[in-house]
Amino acid sequence: RRELRMSDTFAWIFAAHALLFVVLGLYVIYLRITGEVGIGDGGNPQLKRAIRAHANFAEWIPIALMALGLAELRGVSESTIGILGGLLLLSRVGHAIGLNRSIGVSVGRTGGMTLMFIVMAVTTVMAALA
Image (cartoon, rainbow, N blue to C red; front, side, top):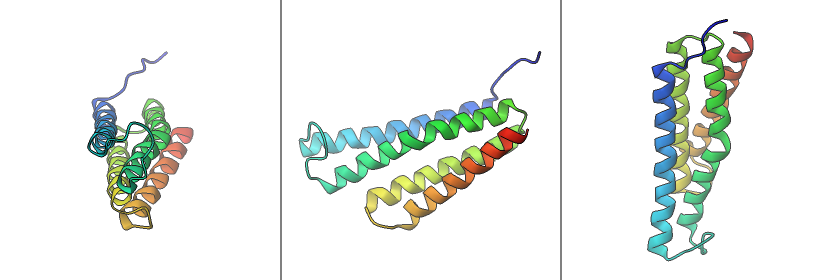
């Protein structure tokens, strides 16, 4: 029976995503305080976009990180995990920037989601086949 252990690379990837989640949440809190909005978006389009960027992260990233962790535990190389994790982080930064600038189509938003789906698909297939 082999020992299950996560690499330092995965730990850093997880920490970076957790930090981005905190930053997105703090931005929502900042907009709530400055806009005097206790719940919801108060009709503030900037706050609405910030809430969606934070929520979208919360909806997608847990499963993506689980897939990445599973891939590593199944034997995918640490360097591959690092590359996929870095691309995942890049996708989420791009999405957050794009969505916070405009609720419409943007390069950051569309590119971020597309890259995230590619990373998730590749990671999931690698985890299943490893």
